[in-house]
Amino acid sequence: MDIKDIIDQTSLKEKVKYNEEMSKYTSFKIGGKAEALIKITSIEELKEILLLAKKENINLTVIGNGSNILVKDSGIKGIVLKIDIKKFETIGEEIVVGAGNKMAEVAQKFLQNELTGFEELSGIPGTIGGAVRMNAGAHGKEIKDIVTKVIAIDYDGNLIEFSNEQMKFEYRNSIFSNGKYIICEIYFKTMLGKKEEISAKMEEYANWRKEHQPLELPNAGSTFKRGEDFITAKLIDEAGLKGYKIGGAQISTKHAGFIVNAQNATAQDVIDLIEYTKAKVYEKFQKNIELEIEIKE
Image 1 (tube, rainbow, N blue to C red):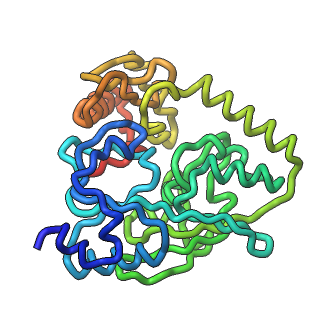
Image 2: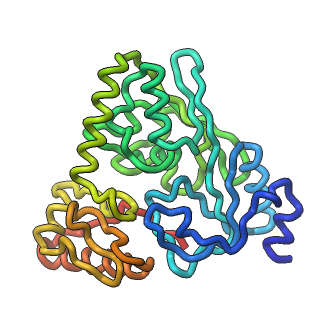
């Protein structure tokens, strides 16, 4: 039985796209085809597909807004689950948000409700779920600083509640980075602020991003993690690699920590440039640099 016959047995059969170009779902605008792709809009849908995949031994790949991933040119076998669970509710002194809500959407909701604490994170691309998974951060703040709890699901379909402490947040890492759980809902602590001040801060951070990051070209955010005792982008720059190209992939001339899709780059162009950059930085500084983006296949 092929994957279409299997999915046709479920309530999700009308939502599936087969042989779907993943370049349409990544901020890099790169990637081969997904064998099957389903946009998941509820926990019930997610549970159904998880149980089906377990029963039929189908490979699952979970994505959010595709802003921190590189999909290989060969594409992705099995089912890609694009998590699009959306919610924004006030429960007591907390805000609960769906994992599929985009960071920018949530920042605007905080602004409209005169809630402070999200300003530094407002310009981060991607979804809330993706941001929690990798403990995204900017301007001295990480998402761990405002998350109180998360509702996630394991691959057996069990819903689990995690406290902030249980999420084991570290730099660009959390308990969810191991791929054993899928984030569904996130709870934030709230603090009242003044709308004008919140708006001014968000504008300040947005202008900083425009000035310092290559927003004009497709990319997946910062390609490499910061080192424990070094700034990776600085080393790449000092290795003379700013602007260096392989195929259509280029180290940004604006920020050496970003690899951009300068001209119809393939995933292999990006991978080759990543490996070249790693080798050159090690050769010059004896420092190993690590990827921040995830490679999917």
